[in-house]
Image (cartoon, rainbow, N blue to C red; front, side, top):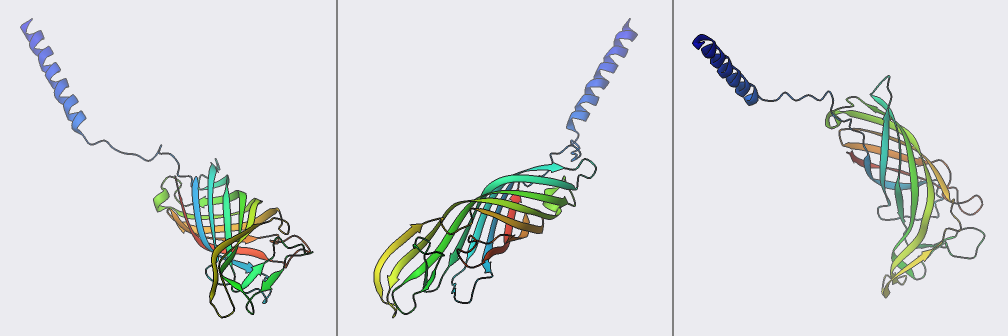
Length: 241
């Protein structure tokens, strides 16, 4: 009996020691079942230009675009490096002009860009547009489960609906640059603009940072209501989550 009790005690002690040793071991981490990095949240800041704008339109400053999207990513079962993403978001463009006004509220057959250099003009003047957009992308990731160390490439299209368009002027001056009135002016109208916008997109990068480009397939203004201008932008993008 004593031998049985002694043997049982030794087995008990051995089990306790083994359990404590296993508890103190460092856990082995694995990324095999880690959640896929999917670029759900996207922010873009870029330089805006107008392709096809006539020489009579004088721009100034730093025209820019800012976009923000929320997207869902659907990887290919046969190749997890490839995926299709669809999303929704907002896009804004800001084009600045030098001693000009844009008659978006004028009762004219087409929008008129007025040269104000020989008369009173605003020190700062811009045309701003805002769109509700739905991007669709074909994506490639070199490391689908390691977003921070993954090479990325994507091409796609965006479909946008015009939400608002307005011009804004600040600080009225005379032709000599003297301040006449330090005030702000805003005018809203969507009359001359295409209500929908279709854009081709591409981006390339590493980790959370990428360079992007966007080109509007259809013109900014409705047919016959303005110059055939197609906005395009290039810039930097941050993506994550």
